Length: 241
View 1: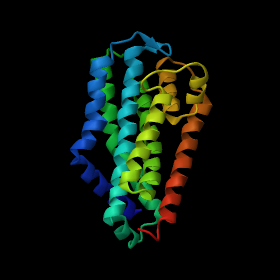
View 2: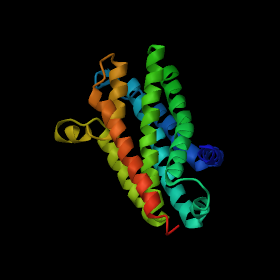
View 3: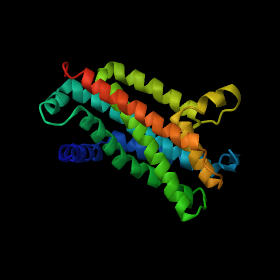
């Protein structure tokens, strides 16, 4: 466990100096919220500024966990950093866990900033407990994409990983309702995505409705699937790094 925590601290220290990562996980969601938070009235039965606050918090957290991590992991593998880690007692799952913990530690900043913006710019008024639940749901959702980042980044070189992760991110965010809430057939398909599940839980919390158990279970299942894929990628590529 000590090795995992040491690797996590190292990763966090590196990310804090990465201006591009900070720009896309914190800066871009802020700009988008300032531009569009007051462009609508209601979505899913809640005020648009509240919905868009959740959407932008998810956008920043999920983008940081998936887009930033995938390319970085792929470049680490290409540069030989992962080969050096293979010489240590760190287990295959340790690398995955360290990346997930790093994402949890770094994405919380973008989540908190957007929520604060929603409160003081978007005029979103919620009980204190709802703010914490919303932050926790989006935060937990980001761990799902950090696991997927390991699965892709560890298996593919940077020139292949980048288009793959971009395509997957667009599919998840578009279907998940970050940019536009779908109805009908596409809306039913989108209900199975982790982005939709995270946003739906937050919306139910804001509207004081009971959260469907399948939404919470869905997030747990997605995390389990992507964590398993990440661990398999690490183990299967052990002889090539």
